[in-house]
Length: 64
Image 1 (cartoon, rainbow, N blue to C red):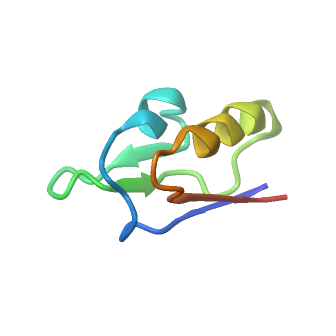
Image 2: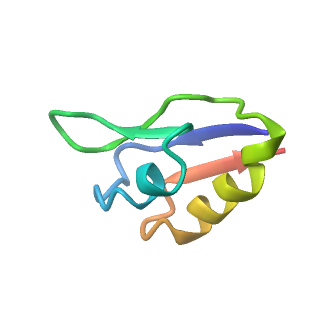
């Protein structure tokens, strides 16, 4: 799995960072999503996919 984001689309809801803090964070100044782990371990894949589905702006892209 590879995770990427489009920070231009981010609405700063923070759902991703709350759901999977091992993978997502937020920029302190602009509050947009940051990817902390671009290739998360298999144990986190389901949670990362769920976070991508819940993202209100479709900012998160997951590729297998």
